[in-house]
Every structure is written in structure tokens, then in C-alpha cells.
Image (tube, rainbow, N blue to C red; front, side, top):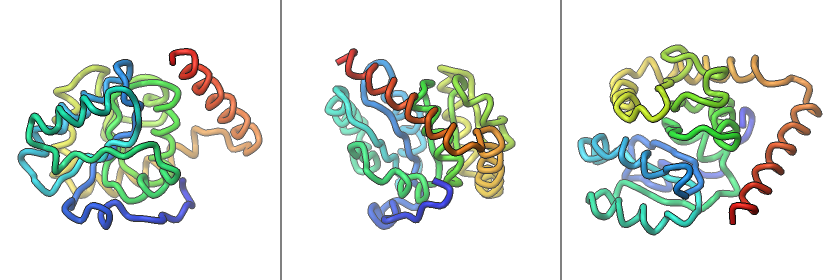
Length: 203
């Protein structure tokens, strides 16, 4: 994610968006992807050139699409299935919004930081180890929708934060992650395998 070269640009794919908020999540009741839409809705209504790109699949997709339509944001909320090239999403979005804590989401947070994508996340999991609020990202208490919404506005109104978070976030993630490539590779495979098995058991 640090060295990967994007194969596409979200701003070219969706030229109507000058600013892209990215969220990566399984679309099911457990991970509450509806919260991302609720958090972003006031900002999207205020700024028609901001878009929310939701990457993921799951049983709630149709419900979320209807919800976006119901609040008249269907032109600013885009749903994409699990991509083969998440590097391009991370490299060309403007902000990652993470509202849920899990092993899979920890991986997404680390990947975003490595790619230089600023992060706004709910606390929990690896968020506390990877990010210091206001220094290399924004961290809000878990389930604090008011904080998450307010921080989007703060980020939009402070251009200096974008560069600072990108640089500091990348430095922090590589200071925290294991530097032994084989050890990290094994840890990643073990985590990925456990996530797949969990998803299979849950149906």
C-alpha cells in the first residue's frame, strides 16, 4: 500500500466529486455501515461535490441503497463491491471513514495509513496504537456519531491537516508494524484466514 501504483483514480471514475470519503466495510448488521451514511449525510447535503464511496458487499446493500435514495443522496453515495485493487481506492480518496472495530478494519486502517490516506476512525482495536487524535488522524470514542460528524467538518476546513495526517500516519504505522517481513506475512495470513472462517461460520 505504501509503494503501490494506482491503476485508476476515484476522482476520474467519479468526476462529479471534488472530495471523496471512502469507507470499507462488510454490509451487514454487525458492522453498522448505515452509520457511515448517517454521519456523512449532513455534509453531503451541504456540499454537492463531496461523495461517499462505500466499498463492500453484504445483505444490507439494497437497504443502504434505498436509504441513500430516501434522503435524496443517491447521486453522492456510490456502492462498489469488494475490489481487486484497494490500493487505488486508498491512494486516490481524500479521507477514510471507519466506524467499526474489528481485525478486518484494523487491516484497513493500517493500509490507509501506509497509503498516505488520512483517517477518521472510531476508537477500538488497533486505532489507539496507530493513531493519536489530532496528530496523525482523528479518533473518536466508539459510537460517538456527533464526534465523527464534527471531525469531518474540521478536516474539510483545515487543509494543513490533510498533509500532516498523511505524513504522520504513514510514519506511525511503520513504526508500529513488525519489520520482519516473513513474521508479518504469517500474521497477516493467520488473521485473514480467521476472518474468512468466521464469515463462513456466520453464513
